[in-house]
Image 1: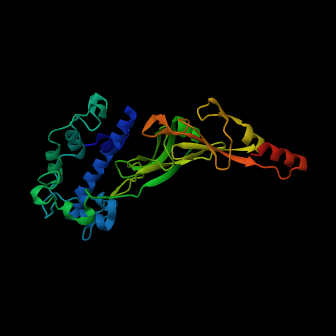
Image 2: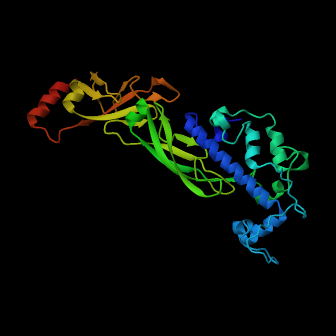
Length: 334
């Protein structure tokens, strides 16, 4: 079991994050309890279908009733099919998680949670089935109701966001913090907006298109699993370098004289170093100077790097005097 996924937190979650996630889980559990209590009781369900929560609270009289403001919950004498254990939901929640109370009692919250070896039995007892997965009985009646089945909710589509990063960020690595707002439900079902800071550790060498997923951090909705929030690395254009896989590429414009007599390139690397590269070869069309291990870090092994590739554009003169032409002929004559 992935305990981080159970509480819908990442591995960098702090104690406050765990407590908040725990309270949300507790609220969700109580909502499920209430929904099952109503929908599995034929009388309560009929009142709810016709009058909603107001009817369940006794504010709307049922057909044939002359009393106003009375409670219309069944006392259990009718044919209702519910087998709900009379324990209150908070007690079951506490027992399920091995706590003295839903909030952890005097222990200070979910940090002291103890796994209860009877969790499957308690779950089955609570939902009225022979096992947590329904056992040989095929699950409770509520479990067999198709769209009413709380164990197979649909998951919302991922929410994707671009995460712009400079080439320097992707070379050295950087930590970015993104603030999100998401809708969650409290115990009564009321929608609340919660703000949260997501921490993204961009690793050296990551490429455009790399995805960072925060599972189920989207809005909550009835019978829906919250969407994953996905950040996609986007590489900002750079003034000097272009990236080709793990290599860095730059282009320099030089004169014909420099192409024949040599050229010295000076540049500042992405990590701030000053680099001088002498080029003594004759630079002809298509020539490319390769400087080993001065490219981008490899994502799987940042200690290793790609190469720096220098391309050239030779700027030829648009005209020459007759004396210059004669001099070039003498110079280049075989």
